[in-house]
Image (cartoon, rainbow, N blue to C red):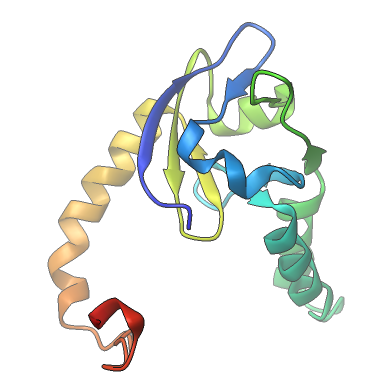
Length: 151
């Protein structure tokens, strides 16, 4: 489970060391790509495969579907952790996300988002401003009473 938030550094080559608690999810490889709000998505290989299967089922005739494919696939790159548990983020992806020497890594349960500190702060402001609105919406995320979490 990929949860939590970490402040991390990038070196001059765009190397980012993944925080120790989340490394096990990425031992078999990962893909890094553009995210939706000018952040990056770092996906474990298994999640990426499921995502690409779902996106590949979308129609090629739809304009929005083609834009989604371009967003996700055009700058995507496969990565492996090096001996220092680091990945290299390409210049194109760093530019897209506004990353320089610092980043915020955010767990999104099945994948990670990588934000510039400034954009993450803006995101946090929006989250807090909208939190009350979400409390009245029926998200249907209830957990059945027999779930192991309640034992």
